[in-house]
Image 1 (cartoon, helix red, strand yellow):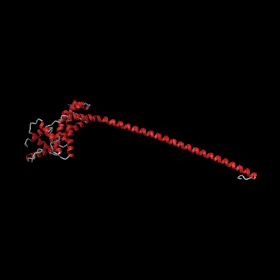
Image 2 (image 1 turned 60 degrees about the vertical axis):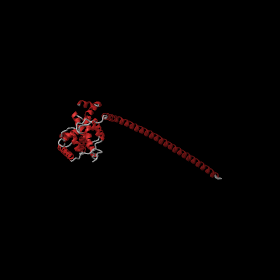
Image 3 (image 1 turned 180 degrees about the vertical axis):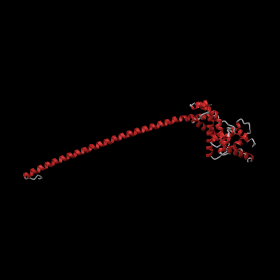
Image 4 (image 1 turned 90 degrees about the vertical axis):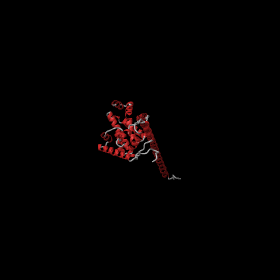
Length: 180
Length: 117
């Protein structure tokens, strides 16, 4: 990967394409789980890769690349969410994407959990997504989001408590068109 | 359910793939972004050409204006000179006539005649 990075830095678009292939799922999914809209998430992921292409010289290694992509994506989405009113909508496109993917668990439950994540404030949403999608530990999340580790742990604990409480209270979001 | 919430979250938040044309669209955007500086250079070149043409036009207009001004001044000088010469000629003629008149009067007074008669 470091070789691909060096070639991409030298202007090789094919090598840059390989880097995109390796990281597009992570970048796109991070945006998708935080905004809940596939088209918007794709636009954001593309913007992130455009930004990467313009900043390739500042990327020092493959590890740094993964860190940089997570950091830029998370901050971009948080900025977007802070500017826009909170809307926790799972579009029909995402529904189709989820149904179409090989999924060992309960699709309805998973959709409800994603809705619960989308109901969290932007910072907490980023922390939870980086923790459970990217499997980062709190220290790496703190570095990625420029937060203290205590803030990350606090976001995690409060978010999990809130989600548990909502599940126990039966506050699972309803599917569109379902009667109360 | 709440006991294994974390493992359920891991399942729910598994990475998903973007659409199939993601790479193609990104490549198209990158290519467009890379050609943008060339277009900017083109715009810069046409702007430079415009400024050069405008400067040339201004220089030509200025030169024509100066030349016209010089011609007008020259004509004015010539007119003044002609006027001065005419005035000089009139003065000379007047002096000569005056001189002739005086001579005639002196001659008449010496002969006792009336020069006006």
